[in-house]
Every structure is written in C-alpha cells, then in structure tokens.
Amino acid sequence: MLKQVTTLALCALLTPQVCLASTSIGDQAEAWLEEKLDYSGDISVSLSKNKIRFNGCRQKDYKLSLATRISDTVNLEAVASYGRAVMDFGVFSQRVTSRAYELITWWEQPAYRVGVASGVRPAHDIDLPVSGSFALPDSNTVSVYLETEGAEENHTMSFAVRRETWHGDTSDITLSQDKSYDNQVQLGYRVSF
Image 1 (cartoon, rainbow, N blue to C red):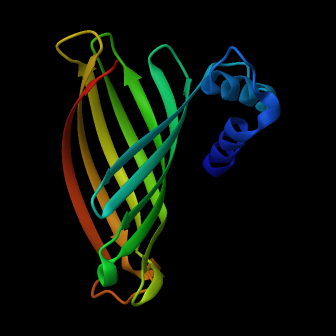
Image 2 (spheres, rainbow, N blue to C red; image 1 turned 90 degrees about the horizontal axis):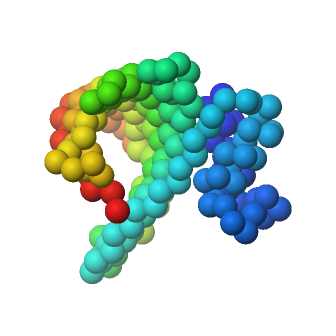
C-alpha cells in the first residue's frame, strides 16, 4: 500500500495536466490525491531535495512525505526517500543509489511530538568501475523520534533513537554474517526560513 500511495504522489507531482498557475506543487498533489483516492480527510504532501557538492563528490537526496491526521493528537506519515551519490576519484570512483520507505505514527502534544517508525531500505546499490555493479544488503529500521520547539518559534529541536538491521542474505556479495546491527542516536536543530 505504501508503494502505491508514494507512486501516486510522484505521478501527481510530475503530471503536467494538473498544474495550476497560482498553487504550489504540494497543493496540486494534495488535491490530485484526494480526487483519485476519493479521500475526504486532509492529506499533506511535501517534497524536499538536499544537495551537496565539492571536489570529487556529488550527493542528492529526495524525500516525499504524505501525512494525514487520524485523530486530534495522532498523525500518520508515509515517507519515500531516494538518494544518489557519486565519488569521482579515478579508479576509486563509485556511484551509490539508495531507496527507502518509512511509516511513522506521530503523537502530538502542545509542546512536543513523539513518533514511532518502521522503515525498510530494499534497494541499495553500488557501482564500481573496476568490479561492476552489485546490490548491498537490505535493511529494516525501527525508530523513536522526539521533536520540540527550539529557542524561537521557527526553530525545532529533534532527537532520534534508531536501530537498523542489515540482512546479509539479500546482498550480491558474500558476507561473513547473516545480520549486522547499527544503533544510532541523533540530535538535530532545524531553523525554518
């Protein structure tokens, strides 16, 4: 279901016949989804792109988020991510592509919000000029998020605890173990302009 909804949202963002002159792409996608899914509730659509580039390295990340309110304090958010990176150092060059999907349930309170998420990264590929292309292990992630206001109204402080499980049997290369775990603690501070 998550793949179908994200595919519909991407189509909504890229379909030229739904373009309206005075509305944003997110508003257009929301209206298109509500019409096609016959859904009367609020759907919030956001698309973000992050890019970094410096000598020998280029990286782009795209994130499509669909959110809907289930009750006064509970939101459901589906996130589809796509990233690609190129490191260009002659024989040591490499190209990496990654796709990920995440489903987050948010409980909102006046001063903070807490999220519990489950995610999967089913396609994580690397391309090396010397050895060709191969798939890296798939992974599943369980996360707990906490977001609260920062020092000012347009500031957000976030805290995340994540456990990612990498599955060795889904890779094109032979690994010494069936599973590997990556535990992360992330602290962030975001300023909106």
